Image 1 (cartoon, chains in turn blue, purple):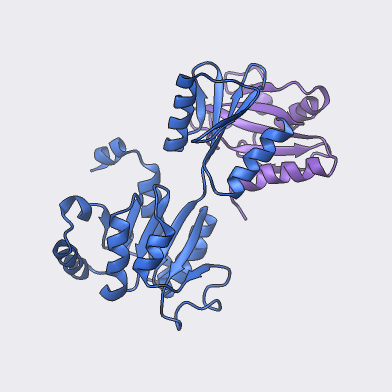
Image 2 (cartoon, chains in turn yellow, orange):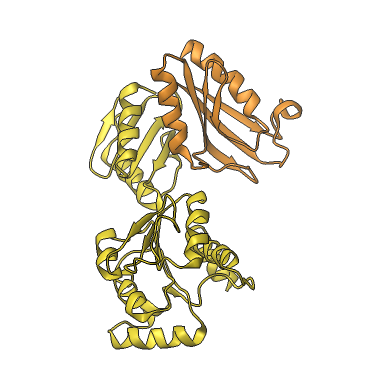
Length: 235
Length: 107
């Protein structure tokens, strides 16, 4: 691996931009492919570049035709938690271990303190404003934890308009039904509702905040990793 | 921090900047129940310091051995590990999976 290739790879990653390293296995000659350009000794034609960029979009590393290995380096997964509550105190560090960059959104100063969340990025803007700035994408999960429609709903409205791969809401079935009613009044429909996981998490009988965090993280993982067809099989 | 590739390549770059010979091994394909997914990496320096992994520990020794050769001659190698391999009893995967590992020098 040439110094220029390694440097560009590390730079792109530090800037949290998607980048692929392509290696011709036969001789180790390489190039860097980003959504916009290409750099390195290895020269790929348009069709090959398109294949690489598809792998980048799908977050899928592997061998491709021509004897190339595509190593996809996508920006880290993100988890946006709305509500700096007790469950967030357990979920934030667990998600960090699982590879997520965690942001906690809560405008209530008493909750979102560095003391309660050491080392976690805290955002004290109103949830709609914060979510709009954070721009959830295909590698972002959004979980609302406040139980307060004033805080949860504005976040949900922005999340539903985004490509967030997972949206989850803490609350009982009754709370969730009321939430969907309100979202319906706000103009959302059945297709949007199916994107929302509520009540939050896998049903493992979780009781304590830490256990609820485990069930939520397990469900987020399931949605991230399980291909749609196997989900259909399981249903 | 248990975080993936990030620290591995950054560590490789740091070792290199510090004047050490360095090689990086990457899982490029897997069959069956291999322990680490495609893209998993292990960086090694000339003093056999390691960061990352390409298996559950079953083949790291053999990979490090090859990595030291790669540091010497600069020629990248594709290594095959699995139960059908003639080295099965030495460095086969206990889980019965197969894995291909590409080893290259960091220049």
